[in-house]
Image 1 (cartoon, helix red, strand yellow):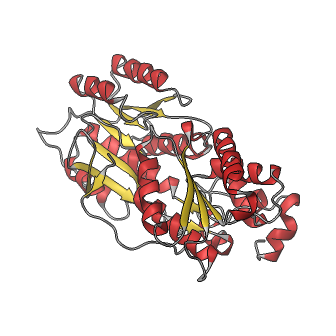
Image 2 (spheres, helix red, strand yellow):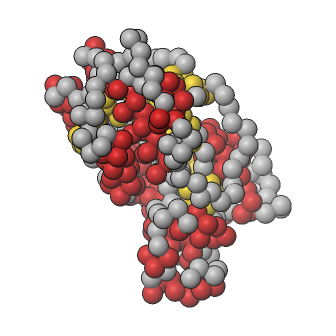
Image 3 (spheres, one colour):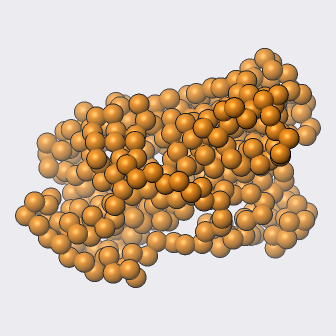
Length: 374
């Protein structure tokens, strides 16, 4: 069962976005809303527990953790701290890490679950211990206090719509598509898949579809090899890949099969190797998600919650979502952008995610020049 959003966003955002979150400028962070019904309040000496799921996706170590750490320090006059643990895609390890944070009596937990269902009992333990849990990036089950992520079904819609754009106006059901979906233990993967399928169904033929264990690029490569063997390397019109890491494995499988002109391939996360593949024409698109915006907002939610600023917290969570175990969970859902050759400069470069020099190494110099990336 996938989470249900109460206020469904209908517009697909594919335009470039250079906005970073600055709620202080909107007055939100200056609002005080202490309430006797809020969590036990503290001053600035807060400890925020941060549980991230894995390191294979470079965003967690490169963006999420350092941004959250910096934002917590900024919001607490450098008196607050972040207790960070990464589970390396091991659900049991994450359960132990969360139990340790409960034992250490952290003030709030930001949880990006390896397995959204398996972690529910630990979420309940935290709730019983009076520790608020905010689901970060993936919607965990159990009595969580809030959720922040990107509009995940919209991510899939953007991927599917852009893939159809790549195929052109002549695309029809004779075009065979391979779908490389994410891990079956990640609720986000179900939403990406639902969004993409809603765009692709009836317009092309989904010849093969895989749920890729652990989001592992090697598993995606093996799945793609099976798809090539079943469909034929010359009969694959496009490949839906739910993220960039798997897109890399897909490219490897196609190249190993002797494919010289790669079909359009999607991705997500705007990882540096993926941006370079887009420049080189090996990957058609990625989905750029403003990690600074998500991470900064998560830190603000965590600090507001533990300090008892209910008005501020409510201002940050104006959406609601349902999980398989809980309904009407306060949420913030951040929109996304389709990243192609056309808008690299106005998205990941303009937002300070990468410098042009990082993207346009000597290997990609000529391709960068050809698209005016300099």
